Image 1 (cartoon, rainbow, N blue to C red):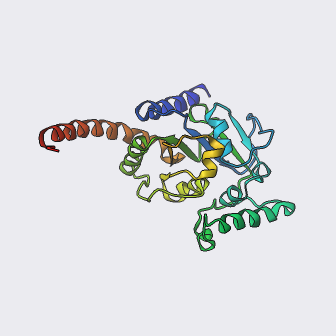
Image 2 (image 1 turned 90 degrees about the vertical axis):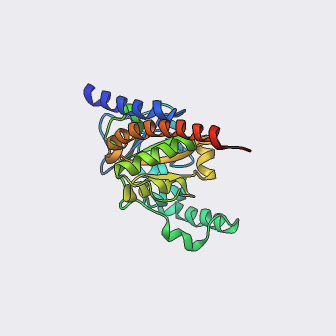
Image 3 (image 1 turned 30 degrees about the horizontal axis):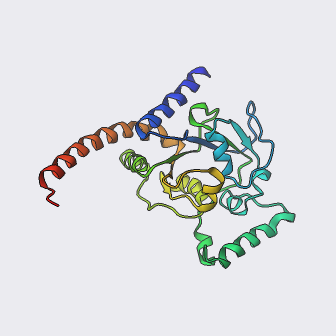
Length: 240
């Protein structure tokens, strides 16, 4: 167990340093059963992405589907059916979004969803992950997102999709299906997680995490060399 924990700690450090992360990356694991030895979440949050904030702050816990009922959109992307008494909330939320022009009805079927409903979802900072993550969320500045995207492409872990828009939570099932994806972060997510205006997300499939970390070392070194080259060219050739 100690060796496994050290592995996750080292893996987090391999990202946090080069990317200059202000927030800890978040390990999210979709489970077919409730896990043993992990704290079950007790309380309420307004959205599924609010759990990201708790994990980034250092908490290790798991949720069950009913913990996600407060967010109709997040329940949709996570393939969680609302209880009968709360089914109307999905219609009401979508009606609001349609009414203010936030999303068009024909866009909804194209929103990525988990293939099946998880029995539980575990959240933790990557370095404290008690289970192998399904996906890992990085909140980072655009320059760091660039490096992660380039590393993902080098590692053969996607990275070619354009940045995703709203809702932010669709980036999780999208990463499972397509490989590493970026998300610009929707307004709801920004309110519920508190990420800053100059941050966005990169989501890496857990199975690809180690090879993306390896590729990141090469990409960071390459970018440093190219930065020196570009600065030299700029000093030599820029006349205005």
